[in-house]
Length: 159
Ligand SMILES: CC(C)(COP(=O)(O)OP(=O)(O)OC[C@H]1O[C@@H](n2cnc3c(N)ncnc32)[C@H](O)[C@@H]1OP(=O)(O)O)[C@@H](O)C(=O)NCCC(=O)NCCS
Image 1 (cartoon, rainbow, N blue to C red):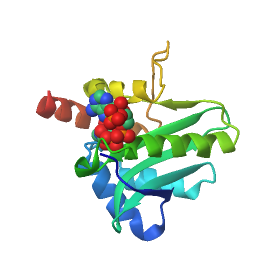
Image 2: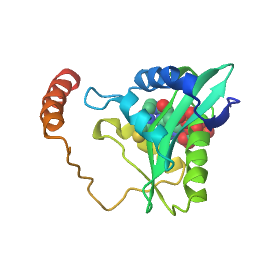
Image 3: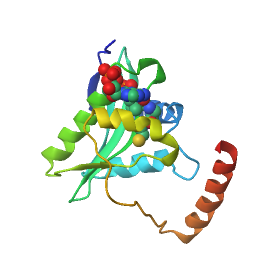
Image 4: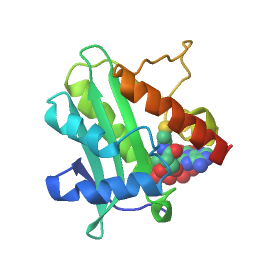
């Protein structure tokens, strides 16, 4: 089955629906604030939130942007009731166009270890594993401390 959805950049009054969708899709974690992430993307000319709209509601969303070197894709999610209809693919392709138009030659994304099932989706779209290990450092020491504790609690609850 294929779903008809219009893809475009998020407008202000869609913020809450998008955050609710990301939560429904299991994309949020206690140590990442989706509202703050969204606000940062909205404040930057180099980032955006793309949404898929159908029947007057948001059925999919993704955050994309580029850092002057590579494009990146975050928070890709499609409403569980609307999956396997091409919306996820359409959002990824729209993010690719958004980044390529701004000069980014590649699009990078992260898949959480606990979300290996999604690798088949990305493989179908032509995404390859990198030969790299992704590292990070939380730059605010207070936030780093609370994040550590939240991750331990989340892992204990979710295995
Ligand atoms: C991943 C996700 C966005 C895919 O959205 P979708 O709208 O269902 O995907 P599409 O219908 O565009 O799929 C395109 C193709 O990808 C492949 N694909 C999609 N979901 C798949 C799955 N669960 N298993 C295997 N292949 C899959 C298929 O080849 C599919 O084409 P087909 O339906 O004709 O077989 C959606 O499942 C989702 O929101 N998952 C939860 C959030 C998530 O994990 N996001 C990614 C974070 S890195």
